[in-house]
Each structure stands twice: as structure tokens, then as C-alpha cells.
Amino acid sequence: MQYLDIMVISSHALTITYFIAGLLHARNFFSQTPEYRWLAISLFFSVATEVAGDILLYFDVIPNYASIPYHLFCVVTFSGFFYHAINWAPLKKPIIIVNVVYILFTSVNYLFIQKIQSASYPQTIRSLVIIVFSITFFYKMLKELPTHQLQRDALFWIVSGVFFSYSGKLAIYSVTNYLITVQGDNMIIIWTFHHLLTIIGNTFIIYGGFLRLRKSNSYSS
Amino acid sequence: MDQPQSVQIYLIIAIGIVTMLVMAGAIIIFVVFYQKKMIQEQMKRQALEFEYQQKMLEAELQSQESERRRLAADLHDSIGGMLSTIRVGITTIAKKLPEPGQVDQTKQMLDDTISSVRRISRDLMPSTLEKFGLLNALTELCERFQATSGIVIHFTEEGSYQTMDKNRELMVFRIVQELINNAIKHAQASEINVTLSYQNNLAIIVEDNGIGFDAEAFINDKTGGKGLGLFNIENRARLLSGRVEYDKERRKGSKTVLTIPVGNETIV
Image 1 (cartoon, each protein chain N blue to C red):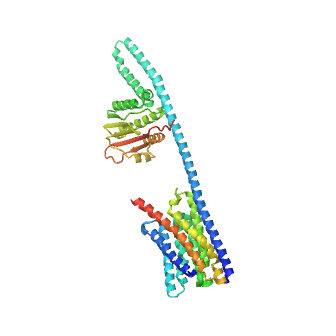
Image 2: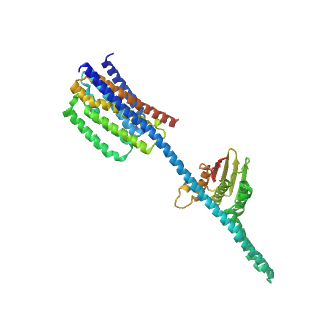
């Protein structure tokens, strides 16, 4: 089996985990709390991007085009999720500023800096933003102690998954530009790493979904 | 990219990824353990606060009881004694009067006053409780309330009651006293049933056929002081490690159940 095959398989596996996680968290979409709605939106946004990338590839078009909307707006969906999960009103203003700056920078990056070839700079910034959000969530959790059993809290697992996955991805994104432009790397192995990290993160998110499912079932029975 | 250099770069990236993952994992593990530690500390603090509140409450109730005991003794021994002496004096003077019947009304008033003093003294500190225990004290309490209010009060005993610590018995007595008092004063009842059931727990049920009441509204009423009696009942029950339940489903009258675990001698 070639490296390319492994990357393609991991890419499909990644899409499947996004889809399962999305389905689990989109249950009773309109009656659930906003953080889960934002999470479901974010997960289906990822599924749509992956599927669109595959379609473009099928028609021999560079799949990078499919990820432009994702790179522009995925911080918005994550911000929505974290803003409601952290539930701390003073965060609203900094989050809006971060989003505006991120979208502007990503647009400038697409138009003038890295262009369509890569979006590693915005991805690096996105990883840092998500890591900061996750640490803020953990800090707030330690300060307020909202639950006695952390291992049964779906949000804890979801944020841990996102935090874990984006910590690893930060290492990848920060060297992507160097690998492409200086080393001329084809990125197959690196993207396989990336997919594996995302699958690990999604597994945590899926587990969080199961915890929520179990909780809602125990309430209804 | 030549082979050895690319392997070296991939290795560096792999080390970078692993380092980041280890750091993230360490943060998550730290959060889990620190959260557990914080919760333990929070629970310890809450337990200490609860213990302190219990002790304050106990001290308050004890000082209340000792003040009642002192007042009861003063009323009975001092004022009661003086009134009895006055009565003897009046009887002696009356014998010397040409018409002894002239002081009959005064003597009657004095008798009533002596009875009132005795009743107040007994209410303040039931001597029956100290001498003959809770069952007799409750029986006497019901008889006394029936005699003064005209309301029919039944007292029933189920199971064989085993005596408790005197302070605990006094608290139970005060609770029943307050509940009957409430039924007489506010419930417009014509019949009150008091049941003492002694099985796995000690349960005391006070029910009446009056107009009923909303216990929660009374307890939450901070302005009128209506809920003070119920608040005292709840506090005493808490000190007895027991609980008070008000039957909300009842359409007519009210029913209050006090349950106390047997053998739990936590209070002084």
C-alpha cells in the first residue's frame, strides 16, 4: 500500500468520523443548547468541505478551492461553540475582534500572500485561537466546578478532543509553508498525520455525543 | 527533497507533534486531577460550614431552652408561691369580714391567675417530659390543648416507643407543640390527630381537618414572620437529623410528618 492510499483512506475515515459526530450532536437540533448547535454546524461544515474537496478532485480540479469557505469561517463556528460552552459574557467582544481579524487576515492571505497554494498561516492562527479557547474553558471549569464527575461531562470530552487534536495540528501547520515552498514536499505523509490527529479528536467528540445520548435517554425513561 | 533530509524533517515534525500532544494530554490530566482536588476541598469546606451552623443552632436552641427553664422556675416558684400566699391571706381576711362572700370574685380571679401562671410555666418547661418522658408529655400536651381550645385532639401511639436522649425528646416535644399550636391558631380545625409511630424510624404525624396552608409560602415569607414557627420546626428537625414533610396533595386540612432516624444521637 502506497502512502497516497493511506492518506486517501485516512481522509475518508476522517469524513466518516465528522459525519458520525455531526449526527450525534445535531439530534434535536432546535431544542438543544447553543453550544451544541454551533458544534453540529461546525462538524457538518467540515463534512461538506471534505465531500466538496473529493468532488473537485474527481473532476481534476485542485481540492484547495473547496476549503476556502472553511478556512474563512470555521473560526466563527468554533467561536460560537466556545462562547456558549465557556458561558462568560466579557468574552463576546474579544471573540468578535478575533473573528474579524482572522477573516481579514485569511482573505489577505488568499489574495496576496500564500494564495490558493496553501492556507497554513491562517490555520496556524486558528490552532492557536482554538487552544486559547480550550484553555479558557478548562480554567473556567476549574474556577466554577460545575460538575462533580468530569468524566461524565460531554463538553469536557468535546473540548479535550478539540484541544488535543489542534495541539498536534499546530506543529504541522507551523511547518507546512516551509515544507511546501522550501522543501517542495508533496505533503502526503504530513496530511496523513493531520487526518489521524483529527480522527483522534473526533473520537473524543463522538464519545461526548454518546454521553449526551445516554443522559437524554436516562432522562426520558 | 533527498531521502535522508526528508526523513530528518519528518522526524523533527513527528517529535514536534508528539511534544504538543504530550503537553495537551498533561494539561487535560492536570485539569482532571486538580478539579477532583478542588471538589474535595469544596466539600470539606461545606461540611465545616454545615457543622458550624449546626453548632450555632444548637447553642441558640439550648440558650432558648435554658432561658425558658429559668422563666418557668421563677414563675412557678416565685410568682406562683407568692400568689398562693396571697390567696391564703385573702381567705384569712375574708373570714374576719362581716360578709365573707364579698371577696369571692377576687379569690376566683386569683385562682384563675394561679392556673394561668402554672399553665404558662408548664408550657415553658414541661415537667412531665423531664419526669415521665415524651409519651406522657405528649398525652398531657394534647389533653391540655383540648381543654383550653375546645378542639378535639386525639393522640395515638403505634409500636413500642423507646426513650431517647432528654434533649432530643424536648426537641420533638417542641415540634409537636408548635404544630398543634399552628393548627389551633391558624387552621380553623375542629379535630386534630397526633400519631406517634415507632418502627424503623420515629415518625410523628400531626393532621387536622382545617383550611390547610402552603408551607413553602410560609417559610419563604421573610417579611411577615409568619414562617418563624415552621422555620424553628425545620431547624429542630435538622438538628435531630430528621425531616419534616408537609402533605401538599391534601385537599382539606393539613398533614405534617416528622421523621427521625432512631439511634442517631447527634445532638447534645
